[in-house]
Amino acid sequence: MNDFLDTVKGKLVVSCQALSNEPLHSSFIMARMARAAKQAGSVAIRANSVVDIQAIEDETNLPIIGLDKVDYDDSPVYITPTIKEMRAVASAGAAVVACDVTGQPRPHGEKLADIVAQMRKEFPDTLLMADTATLENVKEANELGFDIIGTTMHGYTPDTEGLNIADNDFSYLKKVLLTAKHPVIAEGKVDTPEKARRCIDLGCHAVVVGGAITRPLEIATKFINAVNE
Image (cartoon, rainbow, N blue to C red; front, side, top):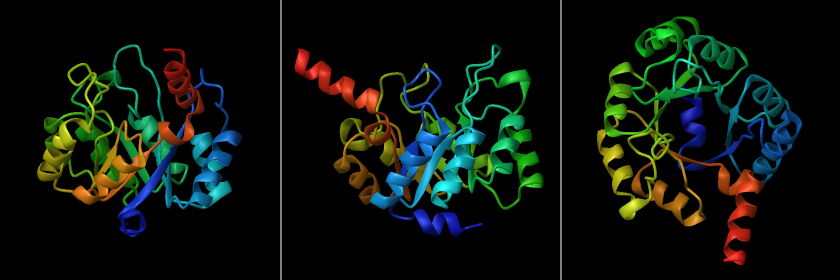
């Protein structure tokens, strides 16, 4: 169970994701993106959807933090929101299954505690990562026994919109590190090598970078906006 944590300790995990409305949406393209990340030295990949997970596994043989982004009408939760997606991602071979832990109502009235308990029974060797937004979320993840605490959703929920884990010299991340009872993986708007290094220096177990590496639409837009000012 701890092989993944040993592999990523002090290292960079590259997130290779493209949503259906993005130009690079393709399991083939994401697999090649992951191949490039591996060549650069990434020790693991974060991937969205069963088809991408399988394609990336075949291409890289790297351990994967898997998730499945699915929108439901009755809930704002979209990162591996129900037991159905959790099972599918684990069955696809992901070493870690990541899911939303933001305290918001889940689809179909499902309860996170029930999902975690069921996953432990069905997939005892699969690690669970909590994608949190606030310190209260971190505390809930502690109580539920998540193996990894992520900062993924900080800045992406109604009560944290616009915030960044790097704000005020990473003051929020420092609080997470003090609160979490399990390894912390920094993720979310880590958009420079210096910020990634700082996350490790502060004591994060690992750091995930996605948009700054694998989302050329976002990268190009930043350059174009700057030039066109």
